[in-house]
Image (cartoon, rainbow, N blue to C red; front, side, top):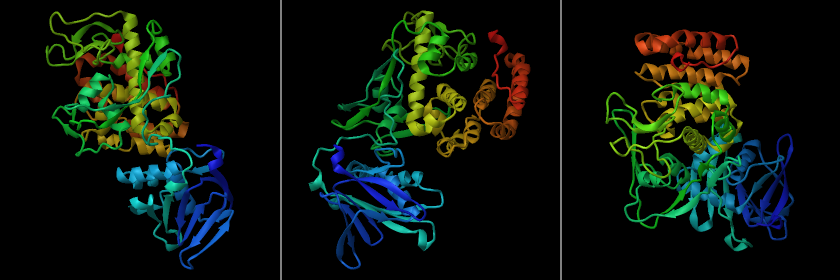
Length: 491
């Protein structure tokens, strides 16, 4: 839309004046007054109590009313230079969120914790939705409505994705990354969410995150097995429009070593070195160049695996460890697959956490969250009821800037000693970019889990060689020296 469709408006608050932009054709109610932007660029005020209309060039709002206005205006655009823009697209997006059951949650995320969102309503025939904002005090409670006049839209609206959905396009900018842009897929009879994920080499959660119109229990079902793995199933009706999120490939020949992986993915080489000491390869830190069963010696029970713990497809073909079906890759190909796996897992994490939250998160905390995603997958790692005791608040932690808490919540309860050791590795990795006071409080909170990991390692013969290394890394972390650690068997 052209800028001529928007006008600048001065909003007078309790202690300051704020500039906003409103598109022609938009209107919103504050209390008993309706503010509408006319074609002549004036604001008309309809007073429901007196049934009279006047014009003005400024608006008076309370702070909580303005906070609600910003929450709606944030649907398809971010406030920049202290200017907030309310567009027809924002109001349409609010209507869509109401229909998807997300309006109240979306508004609440942008409001201060002291305000509550109640009684959201939709008036479809009027292109309007309303909500009641309260703090429990009548002086800070209001009904606010947002509406658009379809007849006054002078140019066609450009569809924008839900702000809470990150399809991935534009997420990475390295020239060696080939981005396959997000697109709309029309389902055929028998299409299943898992089959589509496999077909397009993405994760089931990426499809779910990119399609907020899909409802758990209605459009797809998640079940949890005794092994704590999730099973996601749904058969789409034919001709259903599904967004397939962006996918990322690495240019062949651009990723020959770990340094190349670091440059392409944007994570540090030191982080990758530490990560690869605990990735489930047969020899820690060394890629497996031939397909194998990741549950050796229990042959035939695990996932076909290659490279650095990769269990997906290679060049579009599924892996198999059956006789005659194993494949062998080069070391360079293993690094290429590693880079693509990290890009995929970061895209999954952004889809769950929200791009804005992820961008402001310290790099070391990102590394810790990426590790649990790489280890368990975004769906298992953040949705499974066996783990959500520690992870259901990670997104909230990032939204509020509570990075020490987010780091502590990357902990995974497990009966497997090597995974408990990995908890400590992950935690230490994440400490680096925290300020001293936050680092100390996080270490204090994590201490019982560290002791639990040590006890488990002492019982596991193959891990006893690592105990001194873990203890040294922990002692250094307490001193403010965050170095990570290498497993003895990898040296």
